[in-house]
Amino acid sequence: CIIAGSVGIKKTMVSDRLDNVTQTISKLLEGYDIRLRPNFGGDPLRVGMDLTIASFDAISEVNMDYTITMYLNQYWKDERLAFSTDEEILTLSGDFAEKIWVPDTFFANDKNSFLHDVTERNKLVRLNGDGAITYG
Image (cartoon, rainbow, N blue to C red; front, side, top):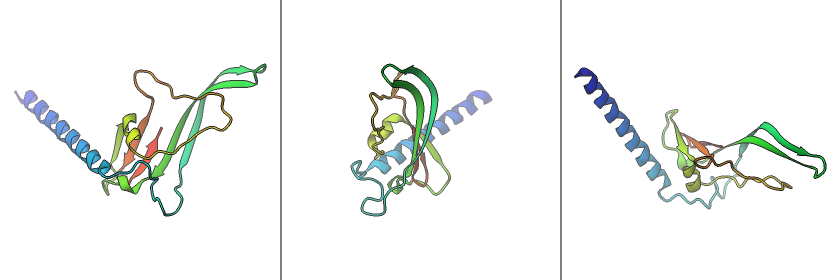
């Protein structure tokens, strides 16, 4: 009986937390214009990047090309998405990236590039309470 009671309390706490996150995200996206970069009209936005090459998959000397697998993470701050003064971090699915401004990153002179898909798109967004974003 005690175990069932504590499980019920824990389940309610998780459910309440999920409701709070859902409400927070909805409020943040209210009136958010994806077409405008953060600090539009102000100073240029600094976007940081980490690029890690996981493997060289194919190298062709004849065609003078190669195939690599890599991880790309980008960092910037969008104060429109600030939701807390705490050091709280929300880890969100890649679908969230479709609703916010993201850098238009490209690789000059590439022949072909794509995001790896498994069961869903291979994207992740971490949103800090101060609006700092990690996208990869």
